[in-house]
Image (cartoon, rainbow, N blue to C red; front, side, top):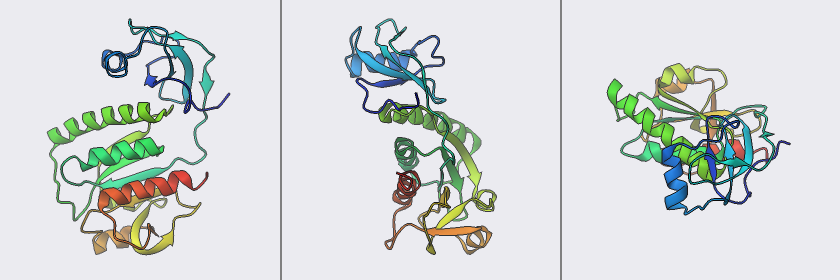
Length: 226
């Protein structure tokens, strides 16, 4: 079976192995205290790599499987949204929403007009925080395959890839041929970055904030085949 757990009764949680359904302490506390789950309550469990099953909750953290293991194949063409870093907690919001939408790959960029500049220590801490946000958002949205998260990548390195299209006025409408979109900073792409890009796409007729544009790109990429 290749069905998805969305719509199944109960919450969704990730474990390292579906052969041993051990929930980590932080997720166990969330299930028991925040969601008030009790022994025997139904939920779904995934390994984050496309495999999942139905299970019953247990306060010990060792769950009991109640179904076979279902396998969801990888998409024929993975979707990618790369976005230029913005201030404060906005990158966290973008990563959360792109995960909920089902984007396959999420990339954080530094562009020529990016105001935010991070050193190595800040990048490491941010990546740890973002990875946890990805897991939490995937649990909330009942994903069975965790997205890949990359950062921090210089924009010119990324934009020169032939499959990448930048969001830019005057570009083509997002269509079946597009599967990787890059979003610039509030000030837009520099002329140099535009010249490096192989493709351009438009996200509409209005000027969007950088974080709104990233989510709009995610919607267009993940919903065009529905």
